[in-house]
Amino acid sequence: MANKEYTVSQVNRYLARMMQEDFFLSHITVSGEISNLKMHPSGHIYFTLKDQASQLSGIMFAGKRAGLAFPLENGMKVLCSGRIGVYEAGGSYQIYADSFQKAGQGDLYLRFEALKKELQEMGLFDAMYKKPIPKYARKIGIVTASSGAAVRDIIQIAKRRNPFVELFLYPALVQGEGAVASICKGIARLDQMGLDVLIVGRGGGSIEDLWAFNEEAVAKAIFNADTPIISAVGHETDTTIADFVSDLRAPTPSAAAELAVFDYMQFVDDLASYTYSFHQRMERIIQKMRQRVKEEELRFSVLHPRNILQGKQHRILDLESRFQRQMELCIQENKSALLPYRVFPQWMERKLTNAKDRMGEYQVFPHKMKEKILLAKNKEERYRHFPSLMEGKLEKKKHQLAILSEQFDALSPLRLLSKGFSYVQREDGKRMSSVEQVKMGEILQIHFTDGTAKAKVLEKQKEERLGAEKPE
Image (cartoon, rainbow, N blue to C red; front, side, top):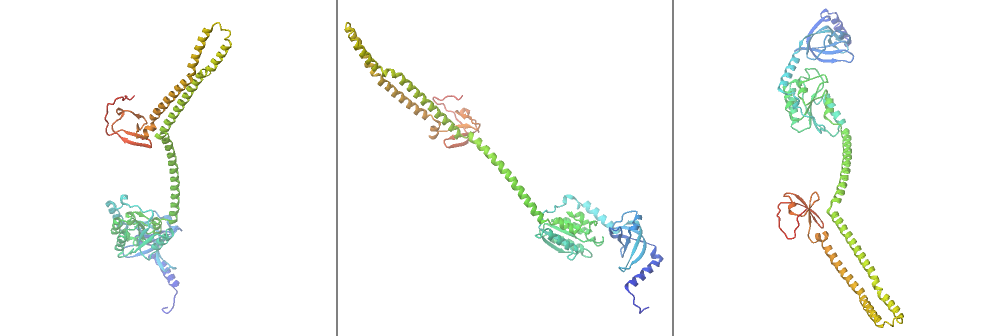
């Protein structure tokens, strides 16, 4: 038989048959710590039993799970009952579990809980120390293995979400001897580069594979870093001390990349939306301010001293027009009154003619008629000078009217303002005519012929002047 050749399948089949026939291996209970626990969608449970020196793969088929009295967890120490068999296709042996019993917690789990409690009491997990993750990070550091699936997933997602983001990789050891020091050095090195955010993690594995991220040195390196850190260790069900200390936990490295790298196209769309909203708001504000300016201009135009002076000027022009019409009416009335006196000589001449015609009748009264004629001639002489007298009076009245017009024009506010005079008002529009009306510190408006000015009363002094009237 030594020279006979056997296939791999034959060897594996022979070993499987031997194990099936071995009574010790067909009914066995193994003590160990559960690690690398996986719940398959089919219902099967894959796990590894470990102790300090060795490990044994195992499986519990879905049909056996009905007798499972408690949920299995990584780090749990159990008594696994079943049989040892060979998986012929893979050439490996494993335990096919029928049942589990709790046998206490594993050493790694106890170390994990002890360190977790210690760091929690030190305050390393407090939310007050958590730094916010930048929404628009442009420089991202990565502390992980350079050849693992984790870094490939991060790079792929980063390029898809934002091709302009800069990635800085520190190729660290993530398991085994020297992993803790390598991870701490990578965090410190990238933290000094002034990056926006760091991703610290690795892909999935057993609790032993992930144990470097459960060490106190790594936890303190994450806590002492000034740069915000996202932990991305293992799968979603894996939890490490680094997850509690970091500023944000991601269930996987891929999820960490999604959280750290902002979507550039979404950013462009948001920016366009914000720009549109900003322009719309500014348009509404400008429109509102324009309306307010128009309202203020209208109010100012009503209260502007120029308009007030124009109103006064129109009032003066109206008074001048009324005075002129009254004078013309008076002159016209006087002319009408003088009309009878102008036609008086013609009337007397007709009277004399009639008298001459009747002279023959009054020859008996010659002396009397001569006296009447002489008297009539004297009256005629006086009335003949009456039109020139009235014209003299009219000239005198016109001269007086011209003098009054000049005096009235001299009193015009516009004339006074143009000569350097001004008038003073309070801010409420009330005019000031006496120093007694002025209060110390009061703001006054001084009106000139071409504008206004504001002044503050710093000093006042009253003077007695002749002809000064007291203000009402």
